[in-house]
Length: 72
Image (cartoon, rainbow, N blue to C red; front, side, top):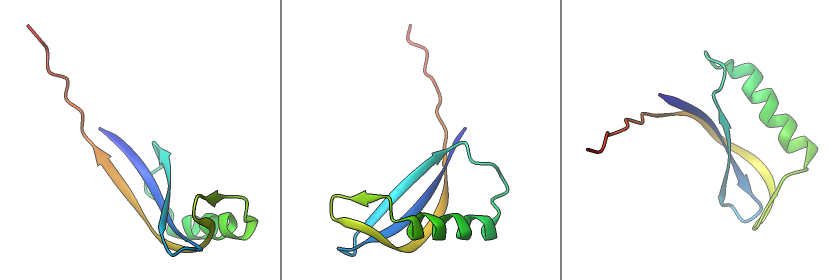
C-alpha cells in the first residue's frame, strides 16, 4: 500500500492547486501541517499556471493499493 499526503491550496484564480508528498510520517501532526502550509503561503515561492498560492483549502491522505497480476 502506498500513501501520499496531498496539500490543497487555492490560487489567485480560485482554482485548487495540489502538492503531493510520498510516504508521509504518520500519524499526521495537524498543528505541524497547518504551520507548514502557512509557511508555504508566507514564502510565496510557489506559483501555478493560474497565479500564486493564496489560501489553504485542505489536506488529505490518499491510500493506493497496487496488486500485480502475473501473466501466464
